[in-house]
Amino acid sequence: MRSELFSADNLEKESAQPGLRLQNSKLLKAELNGDFMARVGTMVAYQGQVQFEALGSGGIGKFLKQKLTGEGVPLMRVRGQGDVFLAENAADIHLIDLEPGDALSINGANVLAFDSSLTYDIKMVQGAGMMSNAGLFNCVFSGHGRIAVTTKGTPVVLNVDQPTYVDPQAAICWSANLQTGYHRAEQMGLGTLLGRSTGERFTMSFAGQGFVVVQPSEEPPGGLAGAAGGQQQEGGILGNIFGN
Image 1 (spheres, rainbow, N blue to C red):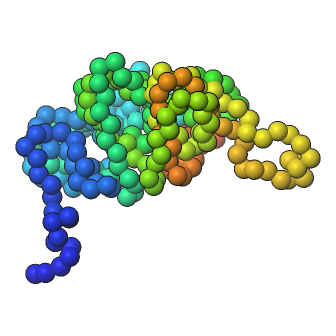
Image 2: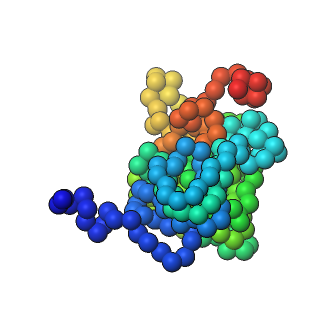
């Protein structure tokens, strides 16, 4: 049988070391000899003796925070020996290696998988206040290990060495030590009263020393652990707690 489908580019990539690696730009391969954490529903194939255990948001504390904030990562623990392939709607996948002392703030909607050696918590974004419904809470990862994040399209990594402003729905992740804030992007004027708007109501500011990753797409507010597609649920905090 002959086909370009069977070219070397599409054949399974092998490695002598276990861990998370890219099979291609849209497919993550985990060579499993132990365990790792992954977003629920992202497994597309596996080989070997593999078990999947749903964990909610990673413990009762994170579960309650998820209900209160609409953020978090609905997790499954993947354990055993074999190869596991993960993907999320053909999004681009990028690997980030965290070293001791590193801390990364990530939009929960963009977390695909990570080493179980990493820890994370759900924290309010500094300066967010209540004037925007996007990006109020993020997942902050720390420790030593690898994490896989997704983007819609090829992102740009901005070095924050001067005042930097980003659409909060396009910000994927950033150095957790950066100072953040939210600002109105347009002022009330005659154009606004007449129905003219730039479409950019708020921008997110970054200051300090670090980086921010921006994708060429605007995700709807809500985050990974909210309703399907990241849409906001009605009913506020209590509605999110008791509505599920």
